[in-house]
Image 1: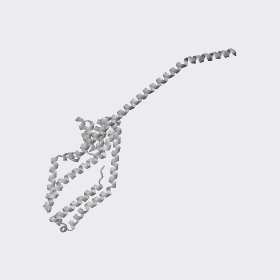
Image 2: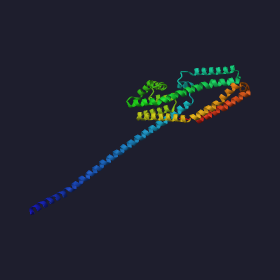
Image 3: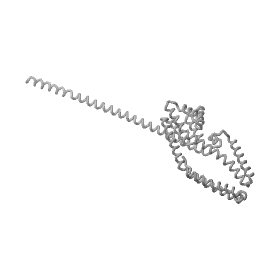
Image 4: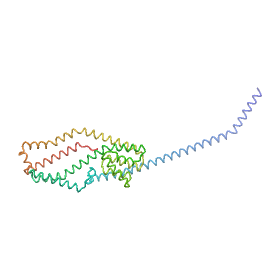
Length: 332
């Protein structure tokens, strides 16, 4: 027992002596490891901060580029709006899908006015009334018909435009470039979308960029839908991004606009029907009076005072129709 105790105590003493000798070295190694860990952590934090700063700088640059692009696009949109307010007759003929020139339009207008004036003179009405009727038919009717055809073609374009954008989205998601999807629309979609996108493809073949060609689409078809499409394509070409997702969202927005427009049109149809009835009543009543008592109402057409009364009535009726039209017409 005494020997075992001596061995145990000797071993314990040697261990304590070794620990006393080696403990400062262990402490220095531990301190060095802690300092190295802190240095590496500081390096990592600095690298992470640098990455965060680079990311913020990149986001700021991209935001600045996007803002400048939006400002430029807004200025171009204002310029197009000013040009759209003063559209030439030739451009209107093109937008209506008619193959005509300004000379042909003027010839048709003059011929229509002369024919209307001659018909009124043959009927036996006064020359003043014949002149007024000729001016209305020569200046107003051709422009009204042209505006009607233009709006009808634009309505057909809007009806098929969302489907054309869906074609672009599916083509981009399947790996096709934007130029090929535009060619697909120019060959496979119905009119008038096909002819308008064919002009876009022709503009690209002439050396224009995609954004410039799409902006020409908005000039040929001045609609909010084509303006949205031109803005999306221009921003994507300048700042990058997922064009398929952006156009998919645009397609949804256009369909929602169409649905809202149809809903508002259905809700305002009652007011429009009332306006049509009120506007047509004077004409129908005057025609019925002319059939039953022609001598009684013919004074409005044969006498100068009757012509003045008839002109004042037509002016007041036109004012009322214009006011009712403004009340039941909504902008989208």
